[in-house]
Length: 199
Image (cartoon, rainbow, N blue to C red; front, side, top):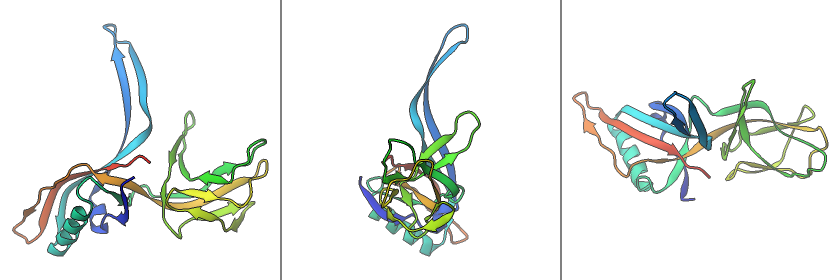
């Protein structure tokens, strides 16, 4: 993946509106009956950045960031201020006949009928805590892929619990952006969009 391990400047994050998006195909008959098909099982995250008012210094920093990414060519990290952490979640349970030592991180969105599991590939370094049997323990972690590398397989019924924070891998959806100078001295970027990069 064409990806730079850098973050969108923090002063841009506060303008973001998150949009999780599925892709549903459907057809309807004259009687109104529908046939629906989920074309994408995982939501693709989008972010709208609207009416961003920046100081001259902030504008210069963002302009440098955009040019370094070559528009939509390189992906980068984005910190979703509304959805960025997991607390005391079971991420793996030992079972008979399964000897796994590589445990991918995910976030579970609870639902009584159909809980949703979101794969996390960009955890924050130093922000992962792991627990076995109620005790915190250390383990090797692949931060590039979001994978826990255990030194042994989990025993039957043994639960691996995690706390962690994460970013989202995104890219710009356009190779250009518009801006204008305002009478109060700020510089406005009216509309930009980021889209999650599937890994």
